[in-house]
Amino acid sequence: MNSRTLVQGIARAYDRLRPPPPGLVVLIYHRVGGGTDSMVDLPTEVFEAQMTQLTAARPVLTLDHAIDELAAGRTPDGVVLTFDDGTSDFHDIAVPILHRLGLPCTLYAATGFIDRGDPMPWGAPSATWNGLRDTLTSGLVTVGSHTRDHPLLDTLSREAVAEQLDASITSITQQLGVAPRHFAYPKAVPGNAVAEIAVRARFASAALAGNRVNIAGGDPHRLWRTPVHRHDSADVFARKLHGGLRVEGAIREQVARWRAWQEHR
Image 1: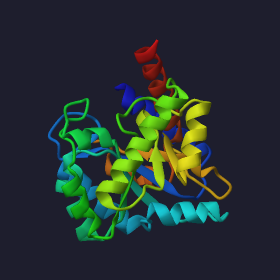
Image 2: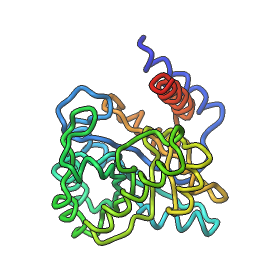
Image 3: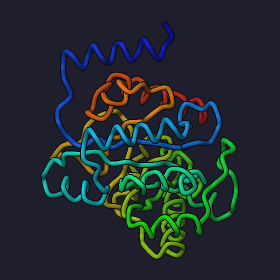
């Protein structure tokens, strides 16, 4: 038994003891059809099968609608699709599938890589502004901020945080004609107090991870999301669609914090 199977077994047992409450589930995707063995690079056919499964299971909401409902003290019933970073497969592969199924989504773009035409730090080709402009014509795509250069915000000064956020906002606004309302913390690691103040001042929501549902009374600047991985079976995906596998999310959250600490110590 590998570690992933063990963790998911523990998470399933916990869900049986304490079923997750009904609420809004926000899924995190990164790459689709990139052809790598990364756990966040889903084969195209796997992603398409998941989207078909999703449409039969729960309503798919726009992030704007979901956040507005939470802000009004209501718990939205449904799922929001989000993508992090901004690789070229988003507009080349993922969006055409979503468009065919009529599913809305949000991309959190790390704009500096797109501005420069540079690959992402892990070698994936970045999206292009022309490609992203084309996706907006469907009326199904929202673009939010993922900073300019994808740094962890828990170690930056006030000035550096402002530069990362404002440069991203400027690029999105100038290139797409719409100011971003939403933000996702790089690597789902919360920022320090300075960063949190800056994010709250600029955006209607801020996303993390955590494998938890979002309910009325929750903080939209602590938007919980659930990562989807290439090895997720149909059963695992079904559980994630309803807020399950919270223990897995808690463990991954601690691992992410530890890795971030290792990178910056």
